[in-house]
Length: 426
Image (cartoon, rainbow, N blue to C red; front, side, top):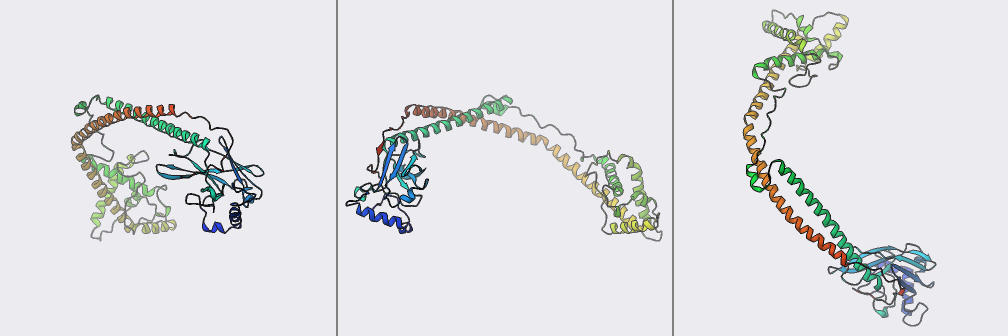
């Protein structure tokens, strides 16, 4: 009775509400004589940008209408062949049975034709009928004075946004052109042909890094590094007290058993360490920065050495002056020799890699110059594209601003009109 193919429909469950059923009965009676009349107990009145919804006390939905914000106003219109629906907001009570809606100055899109309005308690709820079914469409109505004004305003807003966007894009493009012009000017390039002959500075030759040492000095550097790691073994900052050991003291007191097969080798290891210690101890203190690794590194040694050191330290608490056991000293000497070998290998590898890098520098400089010249040509092509685009943007912006000049709008008429009879369909 009060819905057709174009009207807003409620879910099936909504029609089970007692209010809806009562309203349906009254609408049937409205075909004859009833106090609700052809506008089914409502009055929709437009006055400029205000839209008032009024209802009779006998209206079955009157209790629901009486709640401020309960009823919302919706707009439907076609844009690009598609129907668009927009929520225009809730109404507020301004009198006992009068709710006011403020119509917007513009819509999200630009309507292709008329804008249909309808009232509803909310999304997916039944539209509020404002006329009987004898008029065909029961819920949607048109506010012609506002309709033309909002359509023109929406078009103007679109033009204003277009102009704003074009102005921003144009400014960004002009800024990029200016920035690239400066970058090219630094290379003395002013036209595309200059790219092929532009001068690209060669990479500055870097001084040898600290860990790149000539082969003749690598042995001495290895000794300094390993003596520093050996002295760290007695430094309370780096060592747990239980495992702390003065390697120099332990080795100086070492007397290998002559019966052992490797006694002579162990004596030679001890002399080697003591010689290096005496030579470098004064140069590897707090002011020394190792050529390789950190200043806090320790000697590498087998896993059996720390427990042996701990046992020796515990024993010396009762028997001070007890020399280090042979297992401790030989383990420490093996750790020192292992340090020398490892550091020497690392220094050799670093020097070789550095030499290779130095020898390939001219070729890398040549390839770098080729890449910069290719980038120069690419930047010139991009400049030309940007400059052409800037011309297009300026034309588009001028057109958008010109449209703004001819889409000035006047306020909607303030004459108050009853809109129940202004049927609207899409």
